Amino acid sequence: MKKIVFILIGIVLVGCGSTKSKTKPKLPPKTTCAEDAKIYDQDSSFELNTLTSLDSLSYATTYIRFSTQTDSLEKDQIRYKLGKTSQKVALKVFPTIQLTDASILLGKNYNEIVGPILRLKDGEARQEDFEVLAIPNNNTDLQLFIEVQSYAGDGIFVNYISIFVMDTKKQELKYYDFIKYKCDPRDETMFMKTLYYGINKLKNSIK
Picture 1 (cartoon, rainbow, N blue to C red):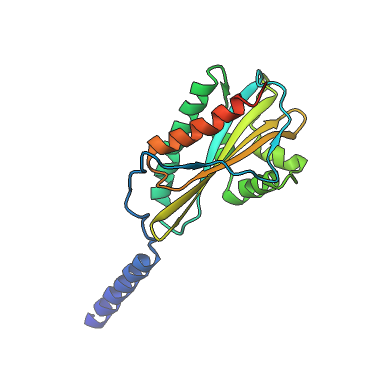
Picture 2: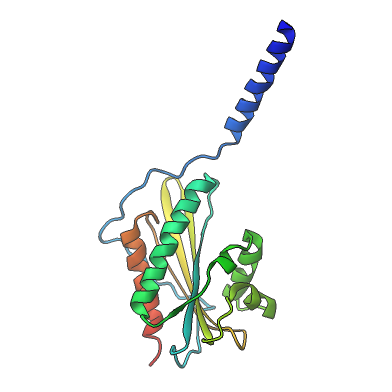
């Protein structure tokens, strides 16, 4: 009987050890961005603007991905906060922009979304890519979609923000811009500042 008890205890301890070893590390401690943190507006060979109007514009969502092997729950909490902040910024810059049901897009898995985003950036998007990324909206032709990609290495964050406007009816990319900043994305003040810069640039791109 004692032998069976020791075996059971051993199995539990091994199981606990395995669970602990599989636990992913946390992100670096949160830091505040410097007040003079720089926004890098780099020209890209694939930047695009063929817009003539922004009167018919809806907002899909801001898709946030962390290229770090860290705790998923922690990253999900950050995604939720920054997603809400992004929506507020979009509404501030475009008060009449129509909101869509972002859960349609966010309910897709990572591989379904990332491939179409990469092809949009490379100017190689296919019809099915627009079908994945665009959220149906019968009242607008144009849709704003934002991607935020964050890297963390040695405690230093680099964040890339891509701003897209798609023609959902013609399934064409009408606008693409790319900016970045280097500091903790959990600092919502700097995140908002950078996003305001990018979305205002979109707004002012129409002459």
